[in-house]
Image (cartoon, rainbow, N blue to C red):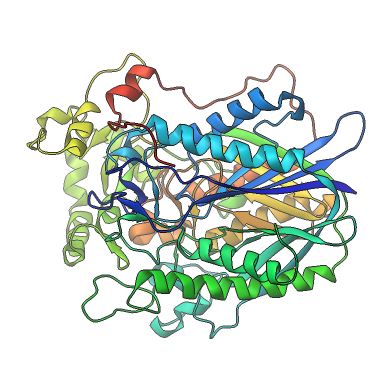
Length: 571
């Protein structure tokens, strides 16, 4: 048997007037708390000599996991419980992707502009809460078993819709759908692990289903755990009514990149919204739908054969700005690679559920794309050739990998009222020379594969679209078929964050998701290349003497110069 422990801690942390992470709107700041935020931890240990193998899964009510937060959590664990041996390979941190959690807990400045700034007190508060959940789960473990179940929402259950069907329909393996069929153009399967003690009593569960945490919109100013938080609350209460107090239920993300919980407009309310005019009611409604299916799967898992008590994990940091793509994942084409991160024009127009610039102006992108030939003449031939081969159809507005906006490295030249708002002052600070210049968004990212019995979990640091997620799952399943893997789970928003991942076919359209795919047209094949490599190393010792890539460290000067004026995080 495995040793299993579960725990839930409150990680509600914020600074008044601190921006929320998700919508990227200056007015979307924290003024109060509508619902508490939690970290739910599941600690597994395979007590096999000569050394026990641990694996910890943690789901947090946050927009994403930052590299800084993951590093800080691991540092806290090394201080509190060094005997556990919990490092990068042993800990999977996941986010529910609520857009109403605190911001400021990343070191990379692009994600801090609307906060505005890095907030050390929020980073520390979140790290302490998450580390406490892990420690409680690890120290409270007992003999137990893990079971797996999966099931799909019926097509008429109003839980999620594809918000970008024109891009979805470009994929050769899908049956094209019309505007009225957006509900079937997603992965409607929920995948669930159930954790029991040795006597079969349920301790908790974690499931993966992709749908954005965007029932609560940018006109909100209270911390809110959104639909996934309500789903967890509903399932935990249902299990408590059955006599299982202390049950911990986590609702993690799957392929969520093009999946929305919003399908309608309400009179007098802006944006595409959920079932009800009130966002909290819509989040409750959506969460209840997820909890209902999860409860059915908890019961189905009780009848399933326990997974073999075998744990494995493999982890690697990869520089996604320069991945050579395996031709197997690019239709046999050779010589393809990724490029330093760029964010395209369409990203700044947002989506129907969260517009940015007026979406009526999106036609400008077509004008710019038609003028591409003139643009080519204005740039050095080698620069244009590289862009055409990697970023291809994208019209770059922010080159976060090369630290440029609209092609300009010297931001002071932009005619902006720099002192008018803290966010503008933060943008201007990006122009200051650094002895060790770092990109504005992360390039060195974690790729993580964990195995529990015959179930493999592929943890990706991005928002993966429906078909892109399907291809990653197929890649990992094929790589691990000889290991006896029968079920593969994609976990998005895990361990770090680097925008979106679309298929190359979806990318060509350059809608919001394609414009937000940082490393270019071949980002998905690059992820498949790396996931295949990492999965095939599962259970093998790390090569001796091989250089280990790590994300860059930010200096105190860099962080403080771009800091939010915090006074001490509020619990």
